[in-house]
Amino acid sequence: MIDLKGPLGHSLLNCQTSAELGELCDEATWDEEIRVVVISDTREKGLSRDTDLTKAVSVDGLEEEMEPRSLAEPISRLDRPVIAAISGDAIGQGLELALACDIRIASETSCFGMSHIKSGLIPWDGGTQRLPRLVGKSKALEMTLTGEVIDAKEAFRIGLVHKVVPKKELMEVTMKMALEMASKGPIALRYAKEAVYKGMDMTLEQGLRLEADLYLLIHTTKDRTEGIQAFREKRKPKFEGK
Image (cartoon, rainbow, N blue to C red):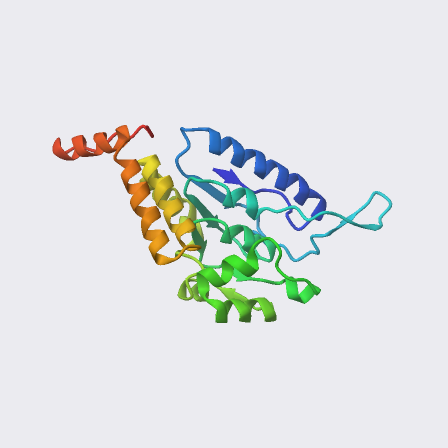
C-alpha cells in the first residue's frame, strides 16, 4: 500500500513525493509478488492541491519557476490494478492523481474538484483527458471551466468514484476489494486492464482483436491450467502468475 502522507500543498515537497512515488511504482512493477496496489491518503486535507504547481519558494523567499512533476504518470504506468482510498478531499492535482487509479473509493465527507482555473491555470497532470473519459465531456467541461467542487454523493452519481462509504470503514472496504482482486490470476488481472485501456484508443474491431489475442495468451499459462484444475476439484485456485 502506498500512503501519501505529508503536506502535498507545498510545491517543494511535491517534487520529493513525485520522485518517491515513481520509485515505489517502479518497485511494484518489478515485484511479481505484488498483485494489487492501494493508494491512500491519511492526511486531514486529503489529496487537495490548490497551489501553483510550477512555482516554488527559494531560500531567499522569492518565487522561482520549476518544472511540474507528475503524480499521475507513475500511477498510470502500473500494469497491476490500482485502488485509491480517498479519505479526505481530492482537489486539483490530487484529483488528477486519483483519476490515474483504476478504482476510486471515497469517504462520505470527501469532495472533488478541478480547481486549476481559479489560479489562471488548466489541469496538466492528465485531468483534461481522464476526467471526460470517466464522466463525459459535458460534466468534465463544467468542472474544469468553473472549478466547482462536488461532494462524494455527486461524484458517485456521475461515475467519478465507484463506492462511497463511511470514513471509518474506508480502509476496511478498500482492503477487502484489494484482497478479493489479489486472489484472482495476476496475469488475467493485467491482461484485462490492458484490454480495457488500450481498447479505448482503438476501433471496436481492433479492440476485439486485442481482447482475443490476450485471451489466447492466457491459455498458454500455468495459471489457466490451475484454474481449470481447481474448478474440477471444487477448490480455490492457487495462482502463481506464471
